[in-house]
Length: 230
Image 1 (cartoon, rainbow, N blue to C red):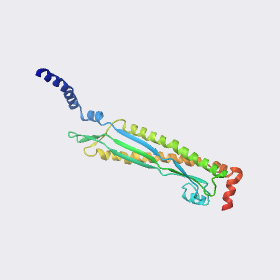
Image 2 (cartoon, rainbow, N blue to C red):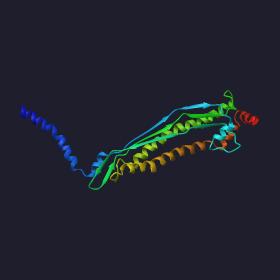
Image 3 (cartoon, helix red, strand yellow):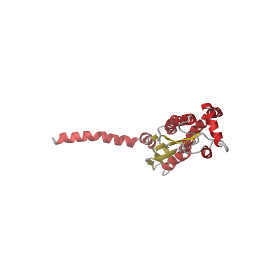
Image 4 (tube, rainbow, N blue to C red):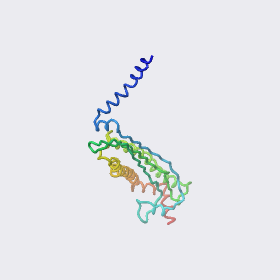
């Protein structure tokens, strides 16, 4: 019985010993490529919208970054996105070469707080003008909702393409600094550029033709309302 028990234990231990021998036979680069795979987490949170009918056309004009002095702002959709980027990574060091590899662990959270949809207070919620302006602003809201998931997808795809399922290599002690450089010099500007593309699409929606259409809507009610007040 003792002999049988010894044989069973020896057999059970053999796979572990084989794995240890296999790991010992791997070079530094082979261990890094096998064990230091990147991990990415990209998420998006969006908090909806609310409608505000308490701000005057002139105040909205002053708040807008795309308007000019003297213009009347019929409505506006405003939001301020926030981006959180966290990173870390375990390392494997090789004393013989003085190098190390780091497994990039990057978490990106795109936060879209509640959007503020303004319709100038000169327009009563019961009026035709109010409904037309709100319809236009809700097109902006819809465009945001369509575009932000695409930003999430592009960030995720770009991270995968950038690192290609491989670790980062650096001199000993500099692996995390190399990862931080990737985040600061490439990832953050990339995300900023993707969000800027959304704003370009938003501005493109407010064409002179669209403004002319709104001013002439509801049999001229909108234009006469503004000019009658100012």
